[in-house]
Structure formats: structure tokens, C-alpha cells
Length: 134
Length: 91
Image 1 (tube, each protein chain N blue to C red):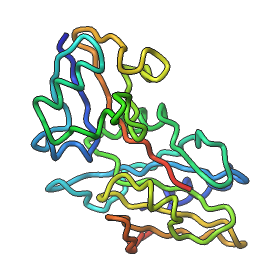
Image 2 (cartoon, each protein chain N blue to C red):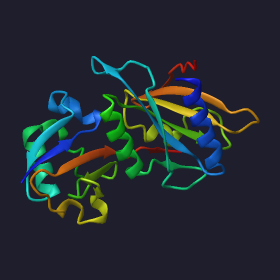
Image 3 (cartoon, each protein chain N blue to C red):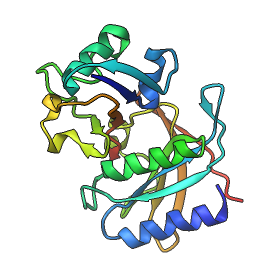
Image 4 (cartoon, each protein chain N blue to C red):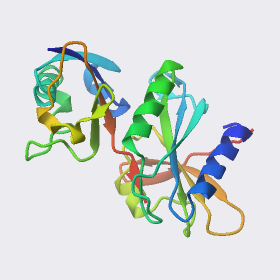
């Protein structure tokens, strides 16, 4: 992702505090899989308004999908903040991971400096998805 | 009624990779039944065991969320676009 996209993600996470913030990532696909490039980041509303759970507001999801589609892209992942725990998928995150192709990005606001990490969640198993900012 | 149905990435494999398919029905429920008849792999992903909208799925008829209309009984018209979106959530 670009520095500007990274800044947008972090700003949205801070803005949402003390509730969890969330948003979507979109980008190009090739041969049926994301290339890894982040084309757009879409800050979304957390319909739960909770410090412990998030649900991407479905209207925001629809708008993001339509916008990404208009640019020849597709949703490639979702990001959300953990307000007081580490940047690692919780049991809830693992249970509710909808798409094995997506990168699940988590931003921890637990300590002074935000920590951003990405993961694949496939069949209940978590593996790291390296996020490069530049 | 003939409608266009936008599929989420996860269901496209059941429709030979297509992102948008055509289907027929007078209501959302009938359109889903038509989809499953055409693409049996989608069975169980759209409607739950009690015959209601699966809780991990959001469905929009054009710009309206069907949960705020008549759910699966929501009527559709020729040319409507149904968007099937996954519920994206966690904690």
C-alpha cells in the first residue's frame, strides 16, 4: 500500500477510537487472485459501534464494491482496529473471516505507536500476509 | 422478471467465475431459487435452514437493503440489480 493509504487507514482507526474502526481494501486481480497491490482503501462505518466487535456497514460495503468495480478492481481485504489488544486476529476474527483470498489487516492501538499487520485466514488457520508500505 | 445478480467473490466459483449472472423471479426468494437451480453449488449460501436470508449475507435490490423491505419476499422488477454482499465482521 502507499504511504497515503497507510495514513488514511491509521487516521480512520484513531478517529473511531474508543470503538473499533474498519474499512475495506480494493485492488486488481490477475488469474482469479489479488495481485497484492492496494488500489483503494475505503474507510467504513462500524455498524456495531463497539470497542470489541466490528461489522462493516453494508451500505458502505456496497458503495466500496461498486467504486472498486468501476475501476476494474475488487475487494481484496478488510482492515479493522484492535483498541486494546495486539495486531493479531482474535477468535471472533477467525470465526467470521469470509473470504480465503482476502488479506485481513489489523491495526493495534494498544500502545503508543500503532502496529499494523496483515493475515490470511483460511480454514480457521492464520498465516501472515506481509504488508509493504511504500 | 429478469434481474442481474452481482455475486461476491466467494460465490463466483460456483458460477464459472462470473461476477454477474442473470436470474429470474418475481421476488428475491424466487430469484435465489432460480440461482440455485442454475448453480447448485450456491445452495446453503443464500438461504438458511429455516428458509430465511442467511445471516452472513447482505442483499441489496438496487440501493435498498432487503432486510428493511420484505426480506426474501421483496418484489423485483425487470432490470433490477441484486447485489449479494458478504457480512464482513469480526472483533
